[in-house]
Image (cartoon, one colour):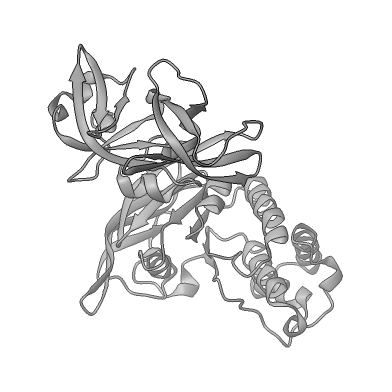
Length: 368
């Protein structure tokens, strides 16, 4: 049976008439890196502050390491905490900052030194160990704060967008190193971020939040491949998923999305999941990489005109107009395309999602 380091039960927190956290429940397994992902104001930082003991929830429980800590002060919860804003002791050296929590625990000097040096090596702080923290750049200060929290090996490490102040090149390295060190020590981490790329890169599982609620929990692949709602589909992925409103129709046993002027074939989709939606307006979701583009007609293809072409790494990002509908498509760099050119598109329909227009839920997942 999987051990649980952190369990949040029916947590709710309001500020006046504003519901910041709306009756959420989730677990973080021991040794797991779990990310709460969502836009600004969705309640993820308030959730973290309730777990840390910095905010008192209106209802619900926080259980850490099997103990109900809901009414305990922060220092008795055995959590580490790193916020987006740097938090170091400016008058102390980097070494003293990292060693601070270990000294409070009265660990032997040799053990303190070993842990501090290992952490300094991990976060590239070795050459700064004898420098006062107040003289460091903001990015280095945040790395010191991160090192100080990790080195004490808390039951749960709480990270509130800890890499925001770090420049892009260092951030990529720190993501990898944070992940590697977390796995080496088996540390349990609850990570809060608005950066979906960061969450997808480092997380074992992700909880997607919106307006105080957790909409979906799953592995990065599950969240990406099987979004349970339009919000999750739109929020996860870059370029963003294409979302097309149309009427679901069936002719000779074949499904298609009717846009009046254009019909998009939906071959290979299990029709039994969609029986109740035939003849109704729905929202089709398809990612740009799941649309094949060609200058020649293809079986089950439909046509449109190129309106914009942009380079996107090793792909071309192509905007195709279908009368009133715009599709974002990724094509190989070698394709010779021009604005205004007629092209043919073919969806990998097994990768398509059909959403209820009213509830915005993914119809394809209703029986899973």
